Length: 67
Image 1: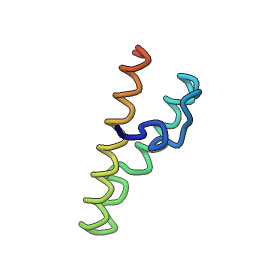
Image 2: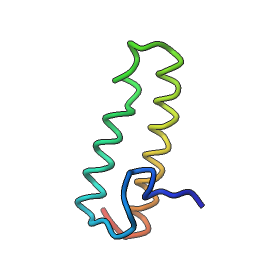
Image 3: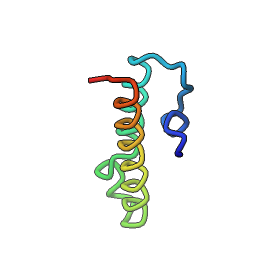
Image 4: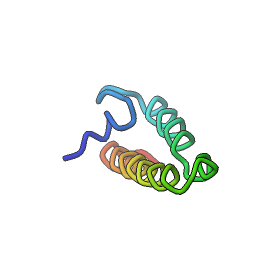
């Protein structure tokens, strides 16, 4: 099982607001459009990380029953 909280830089006791803020921060940091000027290699790595961040957030939302 992946450490979804750790991926977002959180611990399991984080509030829903903290989770949302962490997701937004990480999504902005790793969004492929933000790094497209750095080259294809950076864009691909950012896209992979972005997908993992989305997966972590979706898992946490389902686990906690968040909307």
